[in-house]
Amino acid sequence: MSSRKAQREEARAKRLAEEQARAEQERRTRRLRMLGGIAIAAIAVVAVVIVISSSNSSSSGLATGAQAKKTAASVEQLLTGIPQSGTRLGNPNAPITLYYYGDLQCPVCRDFSVGSLPSLIANEVRKGKVQIVYRSLQTATRDPATFSTQQVAALAAGQQQKAWNYIELFYNQQGAEGSGYVTGSYLDALARQIPGLHIAAWNTARGNAALATQIQSEGQQAAAQGFNSTPTLVFQGPKGKLQPPDAVPPYAELQSAIKQVG
Amino acid sequence: MRALSRESSGWLMPAIAILCVLGIGVAGYLTYVHYAGIKVLCIASGGCETVQSSSYAKVVGIPVAVLGLIGYITILASLAVPGENGRMLTCAVGVLGCAFSLYLTYRELFTIKAICQWCVASAVLMTLLAILSTVRMLRADYSSG
Image (cartoon, rainbow over all chains, first blue to last red; front, side, top):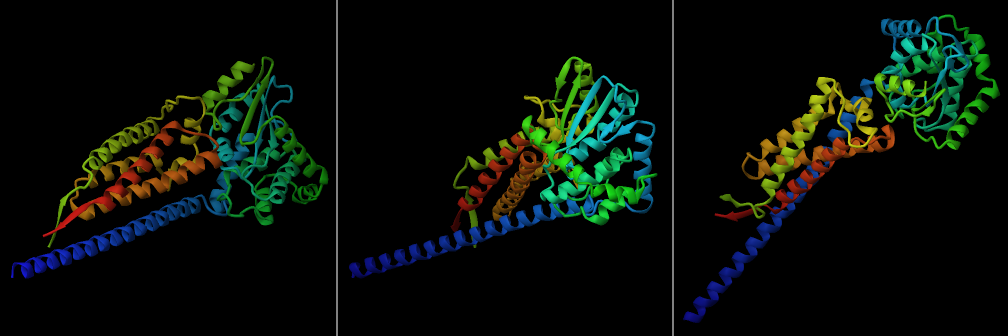
């Protein structure tokens, strides 16, 4: 009698244990599913944020209408009256030279070019204290052929003393990184925003093999000096050479570098 | 009926709370610096100013420091929500914050090519929060009743 009761108790305990184990297994599975859902949702949210953020900067980058006129006017105002020769901006006899290694598709170069660079151009370069030489170094542009085409477009404008107009307009209207926005029509539209640029002559100059060779040679020179990121900024003056510590140095840091090498 | 009996690892909640407070400190400082327009204190030269002034320092016009601050405060507040929903919320915000931090760290390393120690500290805190909140969600103990 008592043995039957013990057996019943044992069976009950076994059943309870099995139910508990099953429930525990179900809970674990449910939580793992929830975790999977959370991970997928998190990745989706971050992807959406990246897409929104990229589309905000406009995938093509090109300004249109009144905005295009405003951008072109501000670049024109910044550069008018400052001598240009090739990719050199400023008085060729200026005691200090800033070598600016850049890639036109590099977003950090854009940050520098629309950030503290205009103050440097409006003050030290305009006063003839500093000259800037832009040199090409491929970093952000994935396709070497596209890199060469876009940088050559700037050099071709340089044959009409308008390289800096082209460079500044490009950075001001840079598209979303990796979106393939640099096309023939994009480069052409930028050129058409430059007042006084002779488009036919610019197009002819773009076919000049010497300009593509110059781009290659500048890249090799940069590599030889150990430069592998853009913007790389090198100030050279009577007291020597100096690279600002920040990749996007604020204006005060640029002034300090000028003081140290000048 | 099922009721939450206890947390299987009692140390998890205080640990998450401490990490949140540290995170609020870091993100709060970066938010303050952003709106005060002053230079970020950087241990080693370089990175911080570069990263903070880059186009990746904002998402749809909102500074990422502000997003981080909101994230840490949300995680801390979610600890007050009882039950499985609370643990799930903590875990969801932690994992989301971690995923976003990884994206920003990728941008620092491969696009901006500069490192901001404050951002790295925040990324480490968010990663730890994601791990601890996940463990907390998976290990929570229930008893039938």
